[in-house]
Length: 320
Image: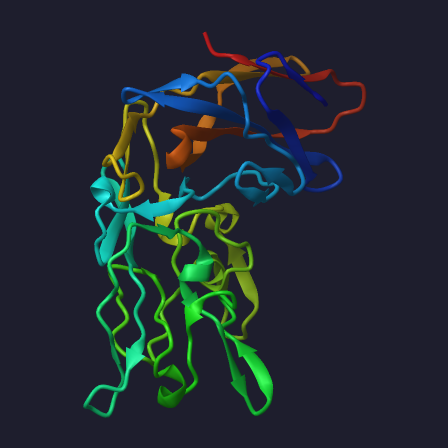
């Protein structure tokens, strides 16, 4: 079975074997939109592709679109936290909402641990700033030397704020990105790193939330959440046409907001005598604030049995 793409947007038919007779498949498409007065319009250039392998996207390396189903709607924001009106401030609250669902990170100006007058190091006040990149390099993590060896914070070796003892923390930076529900209070706190863009597939908190083990440590279940590419707290449970997507703290002119359109794509699947047409559902929304651009990923998963000489066909087209 091959995909006949009549819609002309980036799309693939992903397939994998369940056993020697059954196949799991998913029609996956990604559409690039521009934001116009609170609505999404089809962009002239479809800059965001889709691929069965890792690929180079507009913001860097992108994971393969190689899954049957996800455990929710990925909400991703790429770029930087930006102070409203371009006026420096010590903290910017980045918040993302979809319908009644909300998630966010707090972004601080530069801070270091100070010896102060007590026994424990205390953070200095954050330096007011205008812009800070929303990347894992600014989240909790990093590396420390121990007994001549470099010891990384496994979930985020490229970050900052991880120290092996109080002395090593003095005059060293705290992370800029923090979870507003679990702010750092002591130098030895080890919070989960947070982000708003793509979550690495080997990211510890992502694995912990999506894989279940028995008492002997054997994997008993892999949840669909394992296949989500947003950070765990940025996975919404669902989306409906007309829901408002809102992102605050990422543009100097104020929040970016738009209505989520009804899925515009449908797939026609023919297997033997069965001939069905089904809409593709949303499973990712990505925002590029600086470009006024949005991509939405659409997916329709299905299964079928392989029967010799049975006719099979799969088409992607614009919905009626």
